Image 1 (spheres, rainbow, N blue to C red):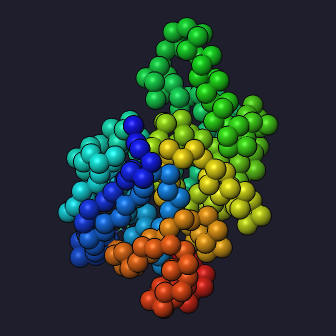
Image 2 (image 1 turned 90 degrees about the vertical axis):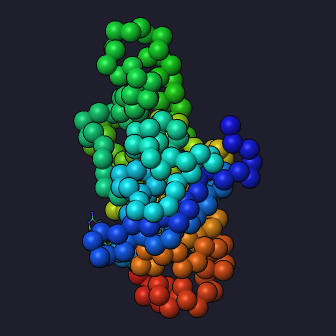
Length: 254
Ligand SMILES: Nc1ncnc2c1ncn2[C@@H]1O[C@H](COP(=O)(O)OP(=O)(O)OP(=O)(O)O)[C@@H](O)[C@H]1O
């Protein structure tokens, strides 16, 4: 179990090239337990690539990834998920014809290795229903738990994706633009829900909207051309001249 103040996730000197293109260069970041940190930077800075490297979708050329102090660099993505390292994607990856309750239950039974055993007994399914419903209520999706996913507002669909990630019981949750495509009016609520997740879940999110970033991030990592330009608290980021120059001055994109 993690103790307060512990580092949930750490990268040490992560490097990655695609041919001659350097997409990660000596990236060392720390995500303390309970963090709500943002990863920002101009288009093509390597934000999604970094998440792919942390979760194992990509292999780094150099460096290490530590989860709860243990080296997971050599592990496959699924093994990292089992250890509590989970992500969501920029694009919607839901089953439109299932209800949120069904989809979340499926994710839970998948975690437990019982997804192919519907006949295994009602008791285990009853506890999966209960857990799924709890997750959905936590995400303010209790009222729509039994509606077909395709009929949900887009912001609710994005919350459901976080619900499916929560079904893996993550310690570290990496959110790649969780509010992408969500109307501005709904994105604040979506981030309120993220901010209110339990403290034993550490969150790193990529987000383009600077109002959201400054409202919800307790700390910000600025990535430029694959390198960490600065990692600091929002007030420091806001006033840093290098950050303004490379990024905030453009005023439109994380
Ligand atoms: N599989 C790949 N092969 C080659 N180049 C890639 C690959 N994936 C990403 N890139 C390149 O790596 C760079 C970083 O891309 P990445 O998607 O990580 O940036 P990003 O900061 O997430 O950008 P955005 O804000 O636009 O989502 C880009 O130049 C991209 O074209």
